[in-house]
Length: 283
Image 1 (spheres, rainbow, N blue to C red):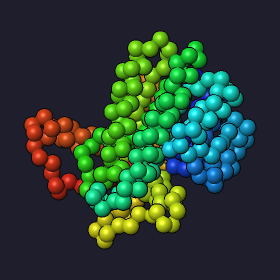
Image 2 (tube, one colour; image 1 turned 90 degrees about the horizontal axis):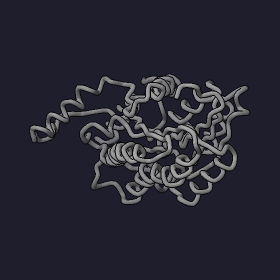
Image 3 (cartoon, rainbow, N blue to C red; image 1 turned 135 degrees about the horizontal axis):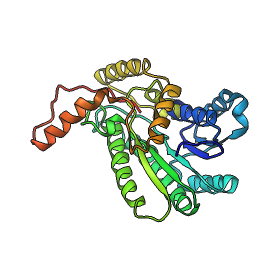
């Protein structure tokens, strides 16, 4: 699929970061874009940045953790456009820190957003996409952290992103058995200049994550490093190029490949994880 003009693109997490970059890139290519996010201010900023292409953009405040809200969102999209050609299940947040010290509400929050948000997108959009009679692709956002071995203080985030990666592999195989022309890709970003390391901005003050000294130092160091990565708009161009090439694995930053190969070698040879390995992850 290379001709995007007049096609329909749906993006969750469109109010900031990678989602906003994908939305702007889709608009530049003449697509009709429906952007969803829990952040109304972010959606307004996206609309403001769309300029003259704003007429092709529709935004809607949606909490991807809410199944009923996602059902209503899918109903609204199909009532408006009748089809979806690109579905980006992209909404995501980050919780880091020692796995046993994270309050259960933190675990529930990140699982509900990062994993169940994708599941809700699949549940309410895929049946319609399979019967719409036009080719379509589902892109689920995981992370390079969803492929690499577990990083220190990264278990909540990486747990959800590994789940998204394997979910999408299964989805790809299952869709191949269906009569509809629908397929899937998994998006695995590395360091992109987004605000995911400030995910607490989306939570009430009494639910913000409290980290220990070593954890906070790690968090700040990675956040500062990520801020120097490519912009969401630059990254979006790479993502669309991979989609146009029909790639399942959308991994624009290949610098992590040696680490990935080393992990697979450790598994194949049953070597214990290297406790000295430190990796920076970013959605």
